Length: 173
Image (tube, rainbow, N blue to C red):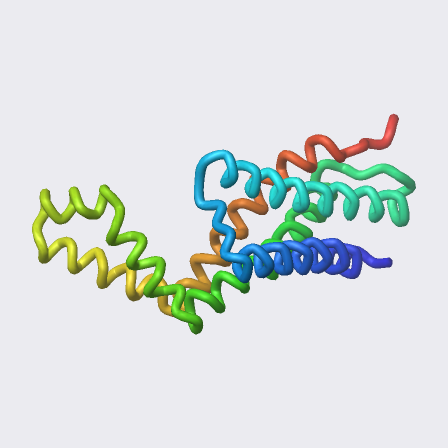
């Protein structure tokens, strides 16, 4: 199996598992927005990403690199596995925000926070309306897609660096 097939296999598998997991939670009406349940959800999702990355890196190193993998190889492999998995998982959010009314729900949540209420009191209606207008534009389909890709890339970078540090296995001299 070549490098891209391996990345796609592990990334798409993890992404589809997470997509199904999040759809089940959404259909069941379960929200892990904060507290201990939010942390539990974060731990489950992050663990799945890390397991997929570690297994993908190990399989590639065993199949093609005689069991050895450099930090750079582990990083690039892990980055793309995470990126593919997270992108598939985040497509659900993008579809929800862009086409299924999630945009209005997110803006309503934003308006109801204490921060926005204090912002209104401190800066007035004109600034408050400008912030809401900016949020409307940010949650449009194309800008939100770019924001999603950027966020996925940053998180993939961070997690891949950590996983690569633990999965690398350099050749002895």
